[in-house]
Image 1 (cartoon, helix red, strand yellow):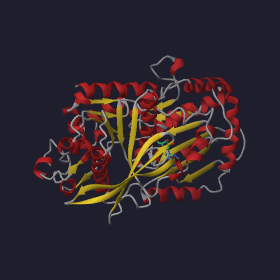
Image 2: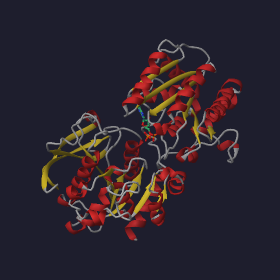
Image 3: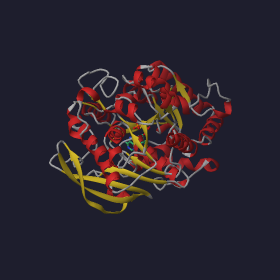
Image 4: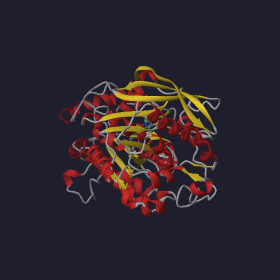
Length: 490
Ligand code: ADP
């Protein structure tokens, strides 16, 4: 099969969060199974070009119709750790992707609508005819709409689209001007509530709503989150649309790239280890302490790695930190937020705890340090308010770091409580709490820290059970292939 991914991120060249890991990991898995995969991305000025090999211009003159005129783009080609990637660079006054950062601009919907249009224009003009186009999140949600409404007539009539929603909260809600810019026009038609009209603001266009309507298959990134999106407010207004299109909506758990995330070969960590050499993990713990200026001693290290976003349960992360310190444990945090206020709060906390020998906060994005934390910590906390899938807990499991998570979304599908899970004891791999409050979190942390302190042999067993879980792309890769086959022949 020939598959083209159109996405706004791909690890490690252009990564903000889990979306980037999924685009890379799924593509790699599909290629390993003998399929042809190409990825189309924006050419951001801030992307890590040192992670792209053989970057060269593949097309000087891609003219993309836009807002009554046309914008010239250069299309680049390069390999991101073996994946074939095309990068679209528009030349226009708006400098869509030359902003020094990936997201966070008032015209984000316009920037990515342009990218969606340009990607299709590129396929069309370069005679690429994939069997399946796989799009991701609101940034590329307009692709199935444009494909069906405009590009089918320009040679892309047989292409099928699978759209994956990684986060329902960000839907690409924008004014009807986007319809004129993209050439869709007809605001009364496209803006109708059963097409792309937004559920909360009837004057706005909801790009994600368009993908739900037009894609041949819609997925989200875990089975439990698929249920939550349809039946709770975690669909953020899209529950009804999902209900109407339930026949094509399914939850497929994300996989983890087991090559990139492998403690036996990880180039970012000082000491390699595996399930049969777990004692060597201690050298990484020592390196982590040294790097984070923590004192030595027999104390468990509790960690948080991830975006600093309200979604992640910020008040509970903060509480976990103080509670861990109270319980004579150590705490490390690596995170960054896109909201100024949130970063400020954590900078404030960092300054306040600057001299504490048991705590270190690192505000920013640091791939190397993330690997060292997974390898060196004992426990990883994830008290998310909602979590479509979550990769962090899967990485922790792979690195023998026990996750302590809230029972939501993909966390519920991947972490099974040591004491209370309905699964057989040998399949349990972490600690889980239900309610997003201090009590819930504390009770899970008490059990986790208690086992670490009082039952080291059992804690060791729990680590090994976590490391034995298979959250690789093996299984989800097959599920996506089955889905692609299904929509191709429907
Ligand atoms: P989300 O997609 O909501 O950001 P996930 O758990 O699915 O959350 O994926 C997060 C990914 O991003 C993981 O690979 C994690 O290691 C990485 N990550 C998040 N924040 C940082 C950071 N500040 N520094 C390094 N890596 C980070």
